[in-house]
Image 1: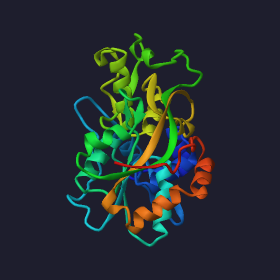
Image 2: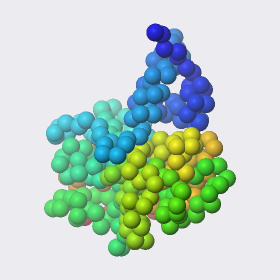
Image 3: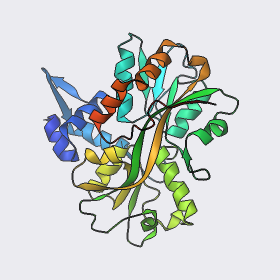
Image 4: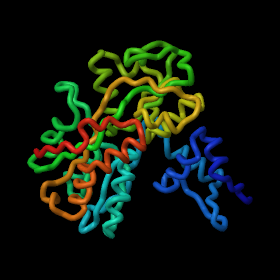
Length: 303
């Protein structure tokens, strides 16, 4: 049986996302594709595989990308945000081979601790101090000297159906009867933020419909809401910009940082990225992407 090949526009219509987002998924390896002449084509089987990989059911876990036991001389950067695409392009210009992992924050920091990656992106909120990332350096990276480079701020919140028919406004609404959510995978910054908010409000997760259903990215989460698979999902504002038929409810500004070993501080890869993040060019590039708070971009701390 021959599988019908779809254009990027066809895929965008089916997934309710923008055509540029389709190309982004293909570029990052999240959506398989083939070429017919000079044109990119995607099969229905590829779309089904992408949708299946984007969600997991109860009792299953999102698998992190396969990484070597030791990174060796490879430069491996872990993180999902679009601003990291800028980093990858910049460092690729140095001629060095760079690998990309899409693990969540918790798993990325664990991989950094074990010497499996070079740089880990993190947006982990700490409820006790109401700060991002810094409290986790000693907790998750004990005895490891690290540098923390601030990339940008992003808004976290809820994806809801267009015009917000259920009038969802805040974290407390997750406990309302009749509201179904789609969760994010354990270990990602969004999930850690959600779980701490629920604990602070004394909301039992067993009372939340859909809490055990997980999606592996902001885009997949927003797409499930758009297709009617849930009433709300959690993610960053940019995830909503790529999906049709949903609205974004902003709830909390978060800070997105790069973490690396101080022993790697003077390597050409880390120097190149640090220089770029501290430059006016990076801020301009973020403003072009849109949706970022650049008031603390380039801030640097060592732990």
